[in-house]
Image (cartoon, rainbow, N blue to C red; front, side, top):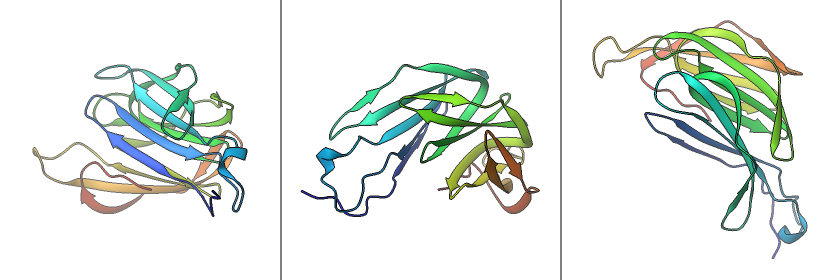
Amino acid sequence: MRMRDVSRARWLHRTAAASLVLACCGLLQSGTPAQDQAQPVIVEVHQAGAGAGPLWYRAGRVGASTIAWGNSAQYDNGANPAVAVEGGTVVEVHQGQPGTGPLWYRVGQLSGTTIQWGDSAQYDVGVNPAVTLSAGMVAEVHQGGAERARGSAAPLWYRVGRVNGRSITWSNSVEYDQGLNPAVY
C-alpha cells in the first residue's frame, strides 16, 4: 500500500490540570511505501500537577496502533503549556504562574526522541496560551486576563513571529476578540 501526500497532523486535548498537546512531524514521502519510511515523531508537553511547577515533555515515534515514547524530561517550570512542531523545530509556550501573568516561550530542535531546548524567554502577559508553527512563522493566541465574572469573556490577543535559531522575533500583540481559552492550529 502506498501513502500519498501525507503532510502533518496535530491532535489537541486539554484538561484543567494539564495540557496534552501532540504535534506530528517526520513526514512520509508521497508515493513511497509506508513501511520503508521512518515513523513520524510527536511531541507531548504537560505540567506535573495543579498550579505552577515542573513542565515535562516526551517525544515518541508513532506506529500503526502505538506510540514508542522516549524518556520524559523536565524542560521548564510554569503552567498550562502548549506545543507546535514543524520538521525538527519545536515551539513551546506556557504561563509562568497560575492565573494572569508572564507568558514564556522556548524553541527547541528534535533529535530522535529528545529535544535540545533554547533558553526560556518572556514574550507577553496573559493566560491560556496556544501556538502553531508553519514555514518558520509562529502564531500565538492567549487570553489577555482572567474572566471578568465566572463564564464571561476576556480580551483575546494574538502575536506573530519568526523562528530565528532558538529564539523568536515577535511582532506586537494585537487584540482580536473577546472570549475564553483560545486555541490555534
